[in-house]
Length: 126
Image (cartoon, rainbow, N blue to C red):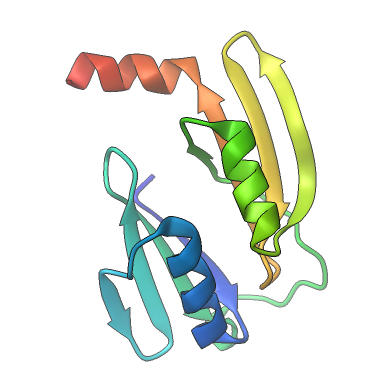
């Protein structure tokens, strides 16, 4: 995975919300699109103006990209504090795999997780 793109009708509000949540400004901005580099491998999280979305969808759904976080409970609490709505509660998927997801204020599903395999790969590369 290199880039995940979310969509927002209020593009400037989305930029402010993700900047607040991530604690950084986007590294790339053009009219109708901005992008952050996040995580250990600097993957890209982009947000495009909803007018560029390939289809319209009334409800959140589809695939969920889960971002590894160090503290799942604290990250979920922060997302909810910023106005995201719980989509799926903290769920143990197996030993070392715990997920949760929210719907951001712009209708996108944002997954978060702790993952022992991710940490093992990260340790190997360090």
